[in-house]
Length: 243
Ligand SMILES: [Zn+2]
Image (cartoon, rainbow, N blue to C red; front, top):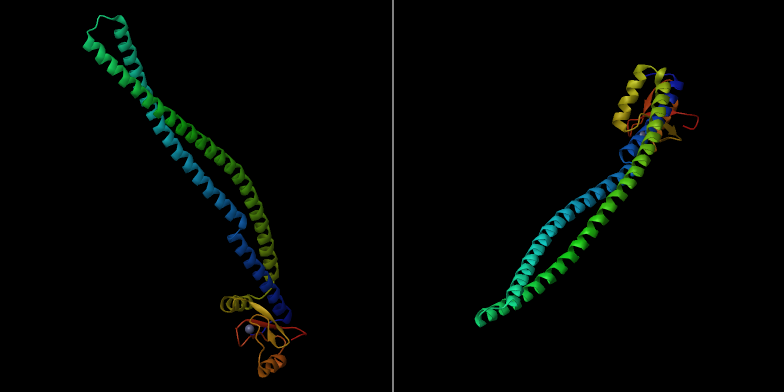
């Protein structure tokens, strides 16, 4: 295939732009700012779940506390009633002994319930502190996520700008090139991973191979408008004064 040497030279510029574009797109697909944001979101989710779990626990403790308090009330009432009975007098000795016995047993029951109540209240307060702490963590994550979103958006916008500029630049470079040459370039890009490369001192700058002497001299003696491809990697090789 034949093509104006200037057009051939421009293919190398297009290949450079394509490489820059691929790099920018790669960076866009693995933005570190996105990874930071994803990490924060996962941490926030875990903190939210921890709050929800602690709340359920808190409700359970609340119910247990209410039950204990009502049990204690019953014991208080019973003790008061028994004491009133004793104080009123007129009981048989057996009745008095039984009441005495019951009052002592109620006192022990009250002690036990009060002990449990104290323990449960402590657990309740600790759990409440947990809920507050996790809640504060969620709020903190919200603020950090907000900042991370801004940073991600900025980084993304910067990359999008660079991509748009590069695409426009590439379009300008390709505009006046013959379609046939661009087709060959596209095939070379698909097969060799690069559309065009400079032949630099007998070495293909795409695959880095030194071409054998026969190939180099064939390339040197080929007409200027002859489009050449690297026998090693198949890329379009473009000759310069250094070739
Ligand atoms: Zn090559």
